[in-house]
Image 1: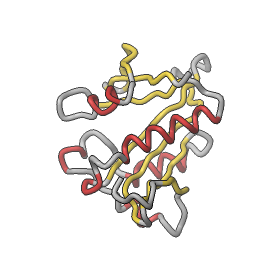
Image 2 (image 1 turned 30 degrees about the vertical axis):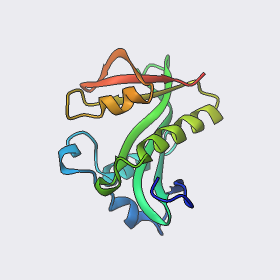
Image 3 (image 1 turned 30 degrees about the horizontal axis):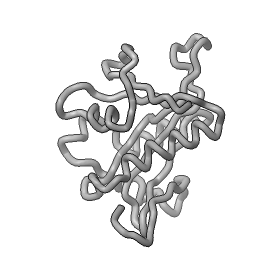
Image 4 (image 1 turned 45 degrees about the vertical axis):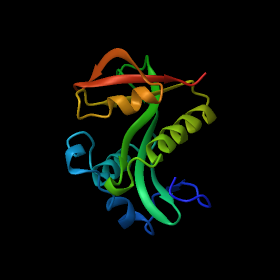
Length: 157
């Protein structure tokens, strides 16, 4: 991380940090691969029992945003409930400092705390997508696609 005395933490989105959260911007070449924070917060609003939006803060400054999902009805037929990372936006100037790894580990820990043993994520395929990042953290494609994106799973057991 950027400082030996600080460590990143997650904060709930509140009126006090809303502007900081919506100010998170990824690199321009990544914008096609992840929705802006504002859209994520709108989705969190309409999915209050499922979405878990959090601001990633380090040493008092916002460095990223994540949104997890818990027990979503994956096939919309009640047969498969999944939890995982829905969105990950790391500020362009903060990338490469371990905040993405921190975000994934934080979501995995929350899934475990809630009794889950798998963490799901989807990513845009291709050289300009985050596939190498997710594979490097242990996610493995499970052969599914979701809205054209690769579905990956990380075993937490």
